[in-house]
Image 1 (cartoon, rainbow over the protein chains, first blue to last red):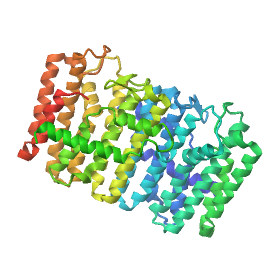
Image 2 (cartoon, rainbow over the protein chains, first blue to last red):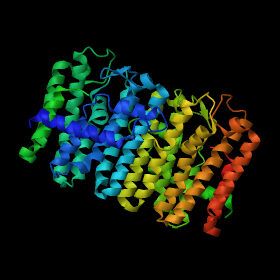
Image 3 (cartoon, each protein chain N blue to C red):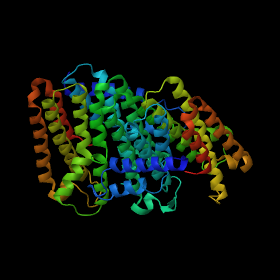
Image 4 (tube, rainbow over the protein chains, first blue to last red):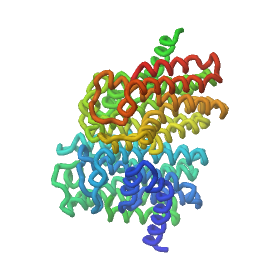
Length: 282
Length: 282
């Protein structure tokens, strides 16, 4: 299988697991389960779960065992988008060409849908730990990356600096926390759940951080190309211009690829993921 | 020590632990840590953590061991109030005589502060499980009670039936899920963490559910007495009148007390908590 076929195959398995790990759409009470599924199945590219299971596969072929962790990280990513799109935050009416959760279900239900998905992610992980106690380190890595020392910290700074000029320090903080932390946690959790040696976990972590930075920069470049919002935003293109941003994204991508040279042939898929993510957004 | 002294003593220990388990107020990034502390330390009566450690004490005297679980449940309760107060939900400007989180810090930060506290609750519980793997069942009980099959489910129904008449079935669903589930999880988690036998866990669970119902009804009665909001709300007083509501609260309280008769003298504090909670709100 070539890269695209492998990726497609992984996404299919993930989608099936996401479906199984959510209560059915007609579960009582009404609306919220529909809303959870609407947001989870609205065209996400499953980058984080793909990264998690691909890192896991470097060390253990029984990829089914890491599916709860992979789905949990996608639930967390989805909740963060729902809350980020709220009028009080980014105030977005559409995402990936579809109406955002609060536009379809109302703001109150959107707040609760985000809460529900975040809580559900931890329900899934705790059930998983009850069966696989050695997954605790992976769950902790995901929890920390999602929290105030990770993604939420980045979102706070993003919100505080909305329409305000940022310096390089703030920009790096936002990118590292808002985006790179959870992407890094995906591969780190995969390696940890598979029981990888510390030296390999560190290599994977380097890969994840560089990949996360490259991805955020590429995403911002794409946003400019597509004539995205005009507000002053904490982005590489806004601060350094397009050309320097493209160069930075390429450098981070190369750094990511170099970081997993240690895995040789086995690391091919993750290397190709790095190139793929630089070409795609969100 | 009489009941009030015991309660005060427990609350002091809980407040100290809540303080220790939150990052300092001046942690980077600014504002969010201030907002988390503002909401956690805004006059909450710590009913859920008090219940958790009191149930734990029935079976194990080393109450320090259950402090992470006790604090986690208070973080979850606090996050739920912050989101519940948002304009898109109950739209409350004050709580316990203080401005609500979104009135002080803005709506965007309030959404993120709730998210941060929910995530932090699970960070604290996962760190605890890493040290005490046998706490996993307690953490799962809390997670389920907080989630879509518990508190969030109740909030969804509360929101859907805002300003609409409810029947008894919907009212019971809302009370059991929105309020009783987390109160029940508090005592159940305490018993589970202390390794209580199943028959005792069941007794405690009966106590918690009845207590939660009594508490919600008492709270609604108090709200009427104080001339609370006039909207049609899913409450016992609105559906059955004050007198029948007082009787129902008393019956649930008695049911709670009866459920823990099996613990004899040791259960005195929890019995007194039931009477105390019927006299207090929120």
